[in-house]
Length: 137
Image (cartoon, rainbow, N blue to C red):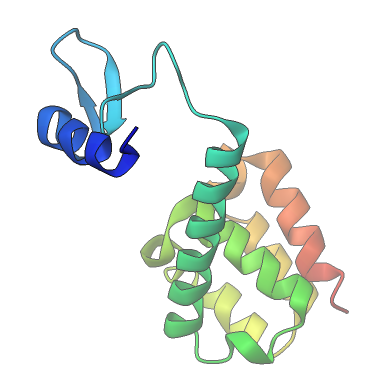
């Protein structure tokens, strides 16, 4: 069977949508007719999506924080975790945290992070991320 031709006809018939939509049956759908309600995605697809998201986050952070590559690996991971969760624009509002990170004041940076709305919304995650930052000491 000509799989490439089948791919082309399915794209022509189903369309290609890169964001979630409801199909004519009311099912949550994405891509080329992928019914998320009934089929979902595979773990392999989820990991591929995660890898793409990690690459995007790393790029956003390194472009937005000029000292990012000077930070210890564990702190880079913590910042990527934060940006993955809240987005780069929201993270950049953590001005005092960023100053402490630039100055390699790990405890102060972690304390600032924990003194935020983010920490009240996600207490367990914020504590884990703050501990990552503290561990750079």
